[in-house]
Length: 114
Image 1 (cartoon, rainbow, N blue to C red):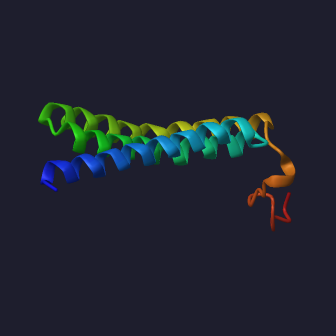
Image 2 (image 1 turned 60 degrees about the vertical axis):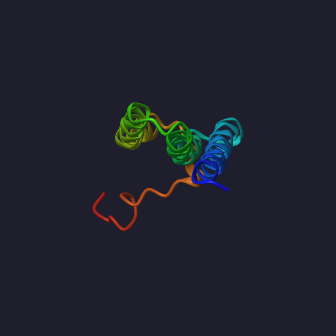
């Protein structure tokens, strides 16, 4: 098998893995019980899936301009996804939109002065 054939197979495998992670994230958004769990499902596997898709596409396309665009998109995803998830978690916690039996707030433990 030639190098191009190997790159195509590896790229297709990465694309399928990325699509699988994105599907897992979508299922988690529908099936998980509260907003904090749904955020976890939306951020972690979705980001990994997107990065795998970008890597697979870069291997399959083998074009400098396309690879540069994919690297830019992957970098922006890595920068924006954690920040957006953190802000959504803070808003959900402040609004009380979570299951209290699943959350341990360490700020409330061990503080006898309150």
